[in-house]
Image (cartoon, rainbow, N blue to C red; front, side, top):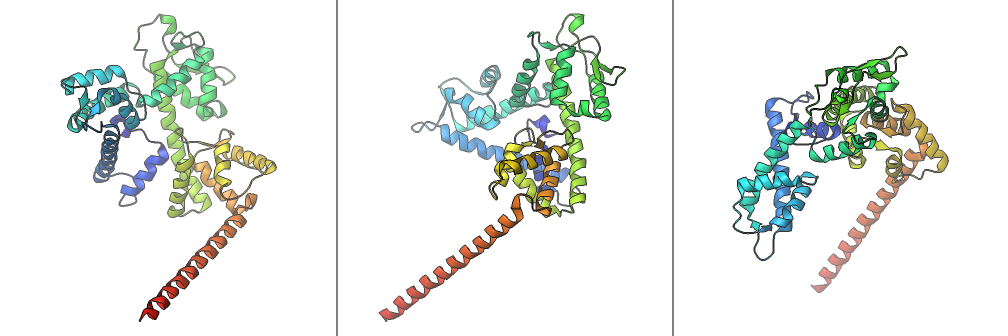
Length: 364
């Protein structure tokens, strides 16, 4: 639902936010909780707009120059704005009597621009502009002949690379077949040979396509449904991991905060990032890196060297319960050292205080 308002968040970011407004702990949002969540989003965005407006305004006039507007919008939305949309909204909301915007004009402009963005998101299967740009790059990398549509062998390769569960499990294959069979026809008029059709399985069970291709609009729908199913699986796997590892909700939220600090926009953490995280506490040599790599592959359902949050929970449980890489020992040493440092600081503070009292007393 958030995506229909032009708000792009990963599953873990959403779950973290829900924890803050889920008053009854039901893991579901009632209407008043949803309203609080949306109010929080809008307040954060309003503050961001104010800060950006103030940072870009002309020091003498206090106005925001037109030529700065695209950069300001990029900072707010996280993606380069569509120039045609900016121009159209400007004509609706701003009188071109001077080459700059007041704060009120900027707010009026952004309100209309946000509405235009929301419409764009709805047309792009719930993806915001930055995500569409990234997905377009992926699509084009498989469109070898630059036809604007993927032929069957290109589509199979894309699915193998970006939807690995579709080739590793029977359920995954069925999911992809169902998604592709439900795709609407292409919006763009093309020859019959390039219109998208559903997928089927061959006699060996591998994924094949019927005659036809997949255009970019249909690719967006395919990825949207694929991501939604992935998030649904993550929720189930997270609940299973919490139960198996016997984590408290406070422990889960602590891990979630750490995970969100290192995870990328895909919601995944690769082995290099995991190493950066662990090496803040302990040193890991080449042999131990191989052990970590194998552990991550074992935890990942697709045997990849990445972890999503459910696998991250299990990874940290394995490391701490087995004291892998000497993590627990190092952490205890660091904790002991910190306690010593605090004791020294307290001792020095008391000594300085007593000296001050002694000097103060000698005056009288």
